[in-house]
Image 1 (cartoon, rainbow, N blue to C red):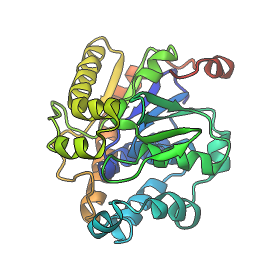
Image 2 (cartoon, helix red, strand yellow):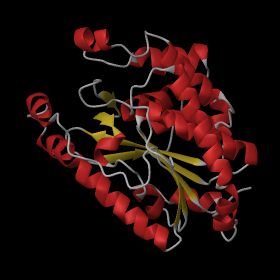
Image 3 (cartoon, helix red, strand yellow):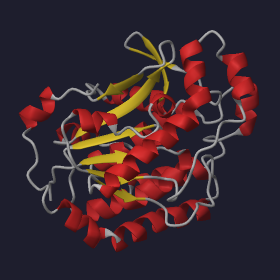
Image 4 (tube, rainbow, N blue to C red):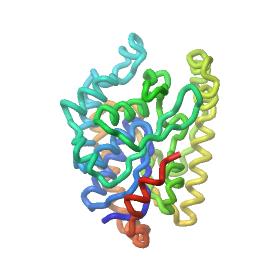
Length: 300
């Protein structure tokens, strides 16, 4: 079932196990979206959905959470990198749990990944990936959290976590003229983001990047303002939100395999319970825009 609705995926590190469960339910129900917008860890999860690789995200989460070489505080101390980025964005997708890039490329869905230009503080959105290497370089950039990973050089820009400039990337969908959106969030309803306790560290590390420093200091304000916008859109029946019904006990760097499995199942079951309501929301959006129109609508 193709629908004229955008799909937005919030990031959140290992909390995206919830998103993986929801997306597998969508695959089981055969739902396709013409445009998928994401940032940070959800870009890794979203690529499997675009390629229609059922269960791949589940395997990814097990691989990342279960292997000490994937997440290591010792590496953070010695190499300034909490996640083994080479392992996650090279070895896993190419050797251990490969992405079917041919299937990804054949998809009629446009896949938008948000990143942050660390020099200007601007959000940079990507939707064209000529090679698998290009795709995973952009995903890696979008997942490169400040302090926990280095920025990535791509097409002459220094890029990092897309969630810094645009934590919930609804703008690319709105700019494409799509009027209805399905959102998968990794925070429970009523969540209010608080200011970071790492502002002192950000100032030390990014004092030569004033625009980036401002983004980091105000990220909680941007997040909360965007959430308020989405709640207003929900009242107008413009968005359908799927999010944890209770606060999550897992965090961004969760490694407990049982907790990740439980979160995946929670996402699947909660989406399943809401599926009838989702169908009702989507019932008047089942005429997707033409492929030509989508190509003309460049993200901004």
